[in-house]
Length: 325
Image 1 (tube, rainbow, N blue to C red):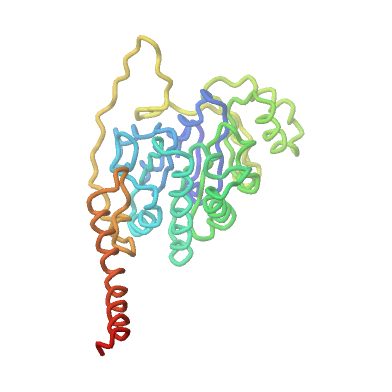
Image 2: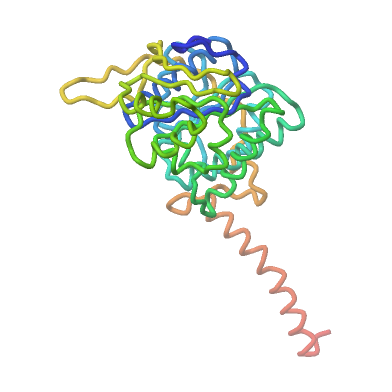
């Protein structure tokens, strides 16, 4: 797989990270890696928090759910999608750029946990790319991120044994859970300049005799310049430049006076999947903002069915009191 430097296909089950400030080219570089996956027909899942990767379907067959370009996506459907994609060899992008952090954490937490459970019983190679990893695997956890954080740690620690690899993509490595990020065996380090960000990189490079030289180089990197840091797995510490992408990158910053030309995207049939409404144990549709006619009907039925036995019992007791029986 040529991304400006050669990577082996075994990347699919490896634990990796891409670090860089805004504008350093980290999402662009991630897209170059994903293009190679699509060329080789290696299945992957991409959690696209920025809505930057739908352009991959300009050239490749890839399912897109969510965002402005994809099929509808429900935050409560994580487990259902894990089950749906497990038996197919297709790749899928979840564009969650329109969701808040809580919805993103809810979806990816249930999705990753279910996917890990499925792979633990039937091993098959698949890679997971997580944009803005600090949202899903935060250093300071809250109740809403607990499931996604536990699932992410589990995959980074043990997923390789079951065919699962993961790449964390972040501009704020200090905000990504240390237990999760420290598992990376192949780290792509682009331009960094903040004190806290550089401190994370400094700790990564602590055993390198030329650490000062490497850090100085990272401070001077131009957009697209990258240090491949993989001393244990690839046994390489090497500067390179990400190759030019073959597909549209929606993550580019818009420029004044320049019109954005959207590409023509390939259309793929959606997965055959039950919605959360169809599998809700009560049979009640998911609430809508105005209550919904179907939900109101359901509430009326519940109310009638609940009150009817009470009315019968009351009538019988009244009959006994009046000597009717």
